[in-house]
Every structure is written in structure tokens, then in C-alpha cells.
Length: 401
Image: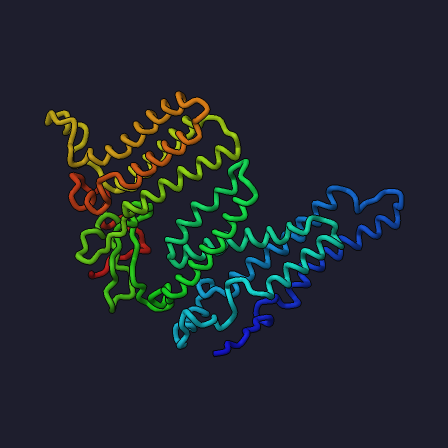
């Protein structure tokens, strides 16, 4: 069966108004240079390095804008009206998107070819710059869109591929192979994300969003509460009382995601150290570990205090309360691992880069996956709340659950 050739030129190519917006400043720059060359014929203004840099930045900015235009204009996740309308149509993932393609088509090659030719023969700058600017911006934007559509497998793969370009001494063929791998992952991830459409299951314009997330910190977002159907006002009584509801959905970080995130942090650390030729960063690792431990402790204990204060512990002769003090174990263990890792780094010699990466991965995994979980801590921890129900924010009035 012969398949028709889809022409997207009217949708993909930018409108004349947008083209004029980028052409006009460059024309004014060229006109100003001609006036200066006419008034000062002995000074070659066009050969100044500042003028060449300005031309390079102008043409690269046009390529960056075009890449952003291609993604924002044609991806349904970037427009709620487009996505809502697409839900009402019989569109399927194996069909072209109605308003135009997100993946590159031949019209994009025409636009980039015009920019490259303009850069070489008129601006006298490297014609590869606009193509490179478009490619990097497009791939980064697609990475963000894959995350917004929850295509996590492709996001993890892209996260491990990106830092390869930072490694010094990498062969040109390796970089070309990594670029091809990035394109393959983006293409596969985009097709996979379209098969999971719609990404927003509920209409945000309705009076009943599907889930309310409580808590101001990331650790407190592990408790989610469903809203009753006929209630338009928030049903929250605030953290930590909301977790006592019989209807909640725990959304903690899984062990697999903790492991992948830790390995990704270590891999980026290794590539950045190799690229910048930085010295051992044991002190920096310990500094960020202390910050991460404090953030974790603050997220767990926001609004919660021990059931017995310091005076009561002394009076009872129990300085340690295992039911509450277990919340300190993971932060303290992470700081201890960072200290031991720093000693290992100082004795690693010239091989400190992989050792730093290993220490970062271990510390991150301890902070992300160490117990207790938010759900277990809030429901079974030996603590009491230091907040009153009457002290909740006005934006969260009390309603009957």
C-alpha cells in the first residue's frame, strides 16, 4: 500500500513575523557596519573579533529559538488546549500529530541549511555553529519533555549518555556514536510517550483535581490524599494530620530509582572532574552531604517533635528514645560515609576521580533509600505534633473528609 508523503511546511516553518524578528537586528548590524566602513575606510570593522562573535551569537540564537519553537509549538504537553482537544479526537499514537510533527522533518534541514549558508557566505563564521546550537537545544528540550510525559526509562538513558561529551580525549567517532545514541533514545522515548497519551488523566480546569499533595518539602510529598467527589474546597488539615486519612497514596522513591539516581550522580561527578581537571573534592562532598542530611531531617520532622523532651529524658533516665531517634540514623550514617569516603579519596592518588564518583554514589543512595520511609515514620514514629489544627494556613480551610 502506497503511503502519501506528508508535507508540514506550513506548520513547521515559522511565520514571516518571527523570521523578521531575527532578521531585522542582523540587518541593522550589517547596515551599521557599512556606514562605519564608509566613514572610516581605513578601519576594517567587519574583521574585528567582536563583530565576528556578535554574528555567531546572533545566528546561534536564531537556531536555538527555532529548536524551542519546534518543541513548544507542536508537542501536546506544552499546550493544555491542544492536549484537551486531542483527547476528544480518534487520534492514535501511530498517526501523525494533527498540528505538526515533534520529531525533525525535511523542512528543518532546509531551515538549518539556510542558516548555515548564511553563516558561511554572508556572516563569515563557522557554519557548524547554528546546526550544533539547534541540535543541543532540541535534544535538551526533548529530554525535558520526556520527563514531563513520565517516560522515565528514556530519561535515565539520556542522563547517562549526556556527560560522555565532557570526557576529554574522547575520539570523534565516540562522540558521533553518542550523538546517534541520543537521537535513537529520543526517537524511541517520544514514540513511547505518545503511546501513553493522555498524560494528564484529569481535566485541571475542573473543580476536582485527582490528587492533593501535602507538605512544603519534598519528603512530605510522600503522602497524597484523594479529594471527595462533591467537595470543592481543599480537604487538607495540613501536615502531618493529613496522613491519618484512610485514603492516601504513598509516593516514595523506589529502590531502583534511588540506585539509578545515585549512579547517575556519580557518573556526572566523574565526567565533570575529568573535564575540568579538578582536584580531589572530598570537602565539597562532605559539605553537600551535610546539607542533604539536614534537608532530609527537616522534611521528616517538620511539625513533629519527640514525645519526651530533653528534660523528660534526663528525668526518666532514657537519653535515647529509639522510636524517635531512629530518624537521625540515615543522616548521621550518610555523613559518616562521606567522612570515610574523604579519607579514601585522599589516599587514592591519581585515581581520585573514580573514587570521588563512587563516594558520591554511595552517599546519595544512603540519603535516598535509607529508612525509615516517610509513611512508616509518620504513622509509627514516637513523636508528637507541635502544630495546632487551628494554626493551619487560610488557604487550607478545614472541611469534612
